[in-house]
Length: 97
Image (cartoon, rainbow, N blue to C red; front, side, top):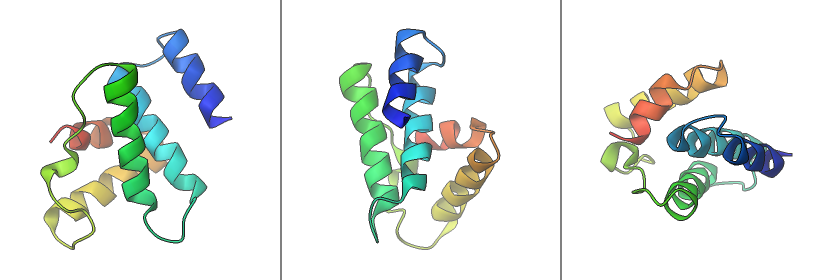
Protein backbone atom coordinates (compact mmCIF):
# COMPACT_ATOMS: atom_id res chain seq x y z
CA UNK A 1 0.00 0.00 0.00
CA UNK A 2 2.84 2.41 0.85
CA UNK A 3 4.58 1.84 -2.48
CA UNK A 4 1.30 2.36 -4.33
CA UNK A 5 0.79 5.62 -2.43
CA UNK A 6 4.26 6.84 -3.37
CA UNK A 7 3.76 5.95 -7.03
CA UNK A 8 0.50 7.94 -6.97
CA UNK A 9 2.17 10.94 -5.26
CA UNK A 10 4.94 10.98 -7.87
CA UNK A 11 2.65 10.44 -10.86
CA UNK A 12 0.16 13.13 -9.83
CA UNK A 13 2.59 15.57 -8.18
CA UNK A 14 0.62 15.32 -4.95
CA UNK A 15 3.54 16.72 -2.93
CA UNK A 16 6.91 18.32 -3.63
CA UNK A 17 9.85 15.89 -4.00
CA UNK A 18 11.18 16.45 -0.46
CA UNK A 19 7.75 15.83 1.03
CA UNK A 20 7.24 12.61 -0.91
CA UNK A 21 10.54 11.24 0.36
CA UNK A 22 9.93 12.39 3.95
CA UNK A 23 6.38 11.03 3.99
CA UNK A 24 7.73 7.70 2.72
CA UNK A 25 10.36 7.78 5.49
CA UNK A 26 7.70 8.46 8.09
CA UNK A 27 5.41 5.68 6.92
CA UNK A 28 8.06 3.00 6.44
CA UNK A 29 9.54 3.52 9.90
CA UNK A 30 6.08 2.87 11.37
CA UNK A 31 6.06 -0.56 9.69
CA UNK A 32 9.00 -1.35 11.99
CA UNK A 33 10.76 -3.81 9.66
CA UNK A 34 13.65 -4.49 12.02
CA UNK A 35 14.26 -4.97 15.73
CA UNK A 36 16.82 -2.15 15.55
CA UNK A 37 17.76 0.38 12.88
CA UNK A 38 14.34 1.37 11.58
CA UNK A 39 15.15 5.09 11.71
CA UNK A 40 18.43 4.63 9.85
CA UNK A 41 16.71 2.44 7.27
CA UNK A 42 13.88 4.92 6.75
CA UNK A 43 16.29 7.86 6.33
CA UNK A 44 18.35 5.85 3.85
CA UNK A 45 15.22 5.05 1.85
CA UNK A 46 14.24 8.73 1.81
CA UNK A 47 17.74 9.58 0.58
CA UNK A 48 17.47 6.97 -2.18
CA UNK A 49 14.10 8.35 -3.30
CA UNK A 50 15.25 11.98 -3.35
CA UNK A 51 18.49 11.13 -5.17
CA UNK A 52 17.42 8.42 -7.61
CA UNK A 53 13.81 9.38 -8.37
CA UNK A 54 14.06 13.16 -8.15
CA UNK A 55 17.77 13.63 -8.98
CA UNK A 56 18.31 15.91 -5.98
CA UNK A 57 20.90 15.98 -3.21
CA UNK A 58 20.33 13.61 -0.30
CA UNK A 59 19.07 14.98 3.00
CA UNK A 60 21.46 16.05 5.74
CA UNK A 61 19.24 14.85 8.63
CA UNK A 62 20.83 17.28 11.08
CA UNK A 63 24.34 16.34 9.88
CA UNK A 64 25.03 14.29 12.98
CA UNK A 65 24.68 10.77 14.38
CA UNK A 66 21.02 10.59 15.40
CA UNK A 67 21.59 7.44 17.45
CA UNK A 68 23.39 9.55 20.09
CA UNK A 69 21.54 11.58 22.68
CA UNK A 70 21.63 15.33 22.31
CA UNK A 71 19.80 18.37 21.03
CA UNK A 72 19.84 17.24 17.40
CA UNK A 73 18.29 13.86 18.25
CA UNK A 74 15.72 15.60 20.44
CA UNK A 75 14.80 17.96 17.56
CA UNK A 76 14.54 14.98 15.21
CA UNK A 77 12.28 13.02 17.54
CA UNK A 78 10.08 16.08 18.14
CA UNK A 79 9.76 16.50 14.36
CA UNK A 80 8.80 12.84 13.99
CA UNK A 81 6.16 13.24 16.72
CA UNK A 82 4.70 16.23 14.87
CA UNK A 83 4.58 14.14 11.69
CA UNK A 84 2.78 11.44 13.67
CA UNK A 85 0.06 14.06 14.17
CA UNK A 86 0.00 14.93 10.46
CA UNK A 87 2.22 18.02 10.52
CA UNK A 88 5.30 17.33 8.38
CA UNK A 89 6.68 20.88 8.48
CA UNK A 90 9.30 20.27 11.18
CA UNK A 91 10.43 16.94 9.73
CA UNK A 92 10.80 18.48 6.28
CA UNK A 93 12.88 21.32 7.74
CA UNK A 94 14.97 18.95 9.84
CA UNK A 95 15.71 16.72 6.84
CA UNK A 96 17.48 19.64 5.15
CA UNK A 97 19.34 21.02 8.23
